Length: 410
Image 1 (cartoon, rainbow, N blue to C red):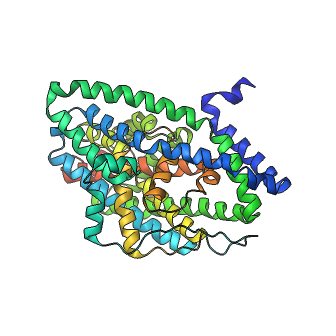
Image 2 (image 1 turned 45 degrees about the vertical axis):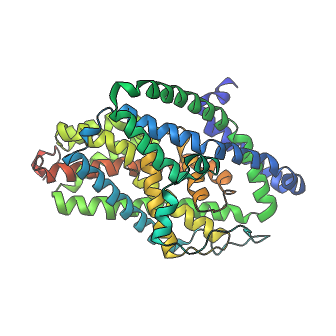
Image 3 (image 1 turned 45 degrees about the horizontal axis):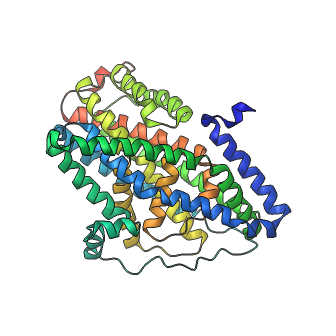
């Protein structure tokens, strides 16, 4: 049984907790409702780590990038392209989610009701004021995420700018980051218990309709990822670069084998670089910059995740999301994804952060966490394939690549 408790088998333990939760929900509904406190404690532990992890991830990423001056012409072009691709992915995902509406038309024994507030009308001035803090300590103490990210970005860039004088701060943040990630890994070990409690409560409260809801959500996410791949990646790359689609699809297929098995953009990076340079013939001078950068800030899969999640949660609790609020969600999702790369267990943390920012209920995070590896396979694959597409577009725009460089062409 030692293999069952290995760190890499956490998803198996989560699946076991999910199954036990289902049994408890049907067999002992009152007990499941009474013990929801266990699931609430798990969600509080996750929310407890949001600010520390985001601060450490943002600061550490800037400190370890080394040279801020490297983001000049190609760097600025790459970042702009990644942002455009992210927003386009969000828009496409919104279209898919609006068609499927994963949280609607589901029969529940007790109709879900959310008694909280999702906020009033949003204005541009209100958005800017909410992002720029007048008291960073107040922002941190109230779990106000976007102002905290902005302050951390500015402070980290300032530390890098002062050179060696900032070394003590860098060393402290790097040490703190290791401690926080270790603490997060300990909290993630409680996920099977948290999922068991939340799943048992969901079954006891809503009945078997929760299965249809989660199933529709998973299908919605996968279809959104497929739509993004075709509309945001394949079509623009084909028309702008003229790449042979067989070569591009073959390269993406090779990368997908790695992303679906590791669910890690970083672990797939060597394969991404090799496929881009050897199979597609992309120049190493561009690939060595855009692909590692994309590994940290190009998260088109995150756009699919956040958009489908917000529509799913809003529909599940019969809440209305205005177009203005959805636009704000797209902006917040862009900042959140670009500011928080490489977080262990990051999907759950980022999803919880996203819902928290907009005052949406986080109770569904538990049931979703049980299937997150299945979702993460799609999200990670789209993230990395977006890097490959962007790398070809940048290389073509710099006149350093043409379709004849591919190894598979007509």
